[in-house]
Amino acid sequence: MNSQPASSPNAGSAVTNRVVQSAADEHRRILVKGAYVVTMDPTVSDLPRGDVLVEGSRITAVAPDLSAQGAENDAVVIDAAGYIVAPGLVDTHRHAWEATLRRSIPDVNDLGEYVVSTLSGVAPVLTPDDVYVGTRLAALTALDSGITCMLDFAHNSRTSEHSDRAIAALADSGIRGVHASMAPHFGEWEHQWPADLTRLRSTYFPTDDQLLTLRVATLATDEIAGPEIAYGPRLAAVARELGIGVSIDAVFGEPSSRAVVEWARQDILGPSTTLIHSTGLTADAWKAMGDTGATVSLAPTSDAQIGLETAVPAVDEALAAGIRPGLSIDVEVALVSDMFTQMRALLAIQRMRAVNAAYGKDVDVRRITARDVLDFATLQGARTNGLDHVTGSITPGKQADLLLIDAEAVNNMPLNDAVGTIVLGTDPRNVRGVFVGGRVRKWDGKLVDVDVDALRRSVHASRDEILDRAGAAAEALSVPGRA
Image 1: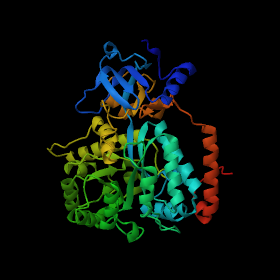
Image 2: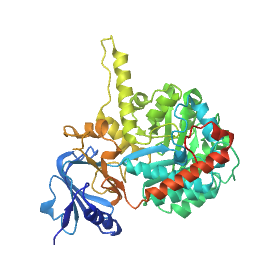
Image 3: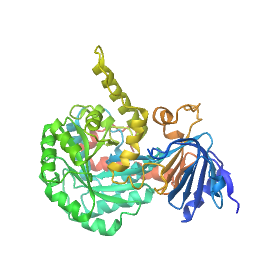
Image 4: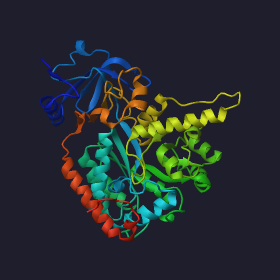
């Protein structure tokens, strides 16, 4: 049988329609042909010119040329010459509800200022619909920039409805979403958490074989918001009973170090627990993390720009403990939204520190590479989210979470090193195609089935209402031109 005519990620509307319409077919066959394939699978080599076959939601074949195997039969063929095909990027920690307040505190000086302005001053006034708008905006922005999997650390779950709407936003965006639910730090709430996790699990996450998954979100210690949301045996038991992982935020310094060692002693630290930030930890804490197989989520721009504990992303400490970390965005109120910036920031900071430590000395130091940070942003991010069996690499059998990157755009041409081009050259405008579970979410450089004008109206309306309700806190935020 004949294939459908070949298309290109920069093609016109007729081809775009063909690719988009294929998403409705559960048995769709999509052949990405002639691209530079960066697999990020240590058992599947990169291909300077290769094909990737998607059937339904899964990758079924990766090879230099699949034509002889009949891959083009009944397939939508994408002519990807001049493109890099790479795994979708993975964000291991983002407070998505804050997206409507983006860059409202760009020069925040420390964690305390963020806590006071955002978690104490603004968070308590958000309605469930505000949470929906912010979370959907964050998820769509992630997809637009090539992030196909995002963990939403939802620490404003004031009511069951707040949680319901956050989950609905992830579902409506089409992203591979991880809803990590946590009670709010401050203000009134229903005290339905963590008991409500049982309802969420049965209602929205009856199986782990779906686009959305669930985790417990918690803090390392009781310093910021009290003992109710600090990790310990009680929350570990909840996670065990529900069969879900745990993401632990605000893992900083000596108090968190003592907590980590105690978690290891209590046997509640392991591969299903993610420690976020992990700056300023002691050697004993890192040993406990390495020995138990715990995962780590680094937030390179958050640690450095806001100045969290040592302000140095703990990549060297993680690697020394045998942990390859995932990467994360954290808070858009003060930081960037894309993973390319996280990779570049971490690469530059680590290599700067390594060279500086060796300056004037006859010593060898380890400098991480562009492939290292791409690994952190893909396969290791998926492992950190508990999804490395599903996504994070271009591996036959895994879900087809894929990026098509224009390697011949003016800022990328000519293509010399594909991994270097992704990490050091690419930005969201070069991400011309995004697939999540084999369904196209961005094509020809535009989000699919998203009315951006309607989105903009809802975002502006929600932002203005939040700031009006926040009263005095709103006055501290720099928002020019607000209606």
